[in-house]
Image 1 (tube, helix red, strand yellow):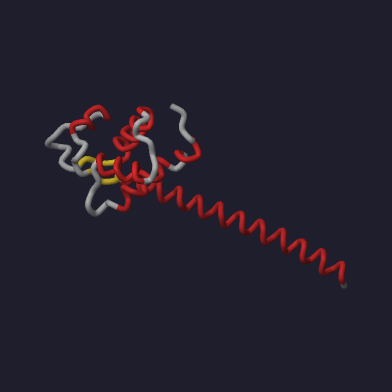
Image 2: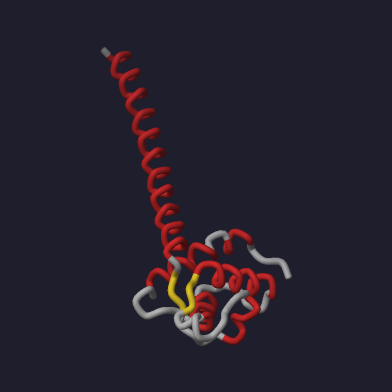
Length: 128
């Protein structure tokens, strides 16, 4: 099944953002899945489902994990309705991404303003 890759470019970021928004209450895999389906992601595609499960496993911490072993993405099947919390490293990745995105935007704005300033000074000198 072919997917629109543009649509999925921000899948992992969306997962982290959803987790960040639920850090005070936790998030189950099934809640995340439902939220992503509501945003238009196709979970009928097994590759998408597996990718989301692996990212969820890598990025979230299972509360009560000490009492109920959760050692691989395969174990997620037994914990689909359990509450998970976004890991600190995952949250820091999201924060760093957002900072880099803002820095890139500021860089582009600076470049555009400097080009406009150059054109202004050239035309201003030509008119005088």
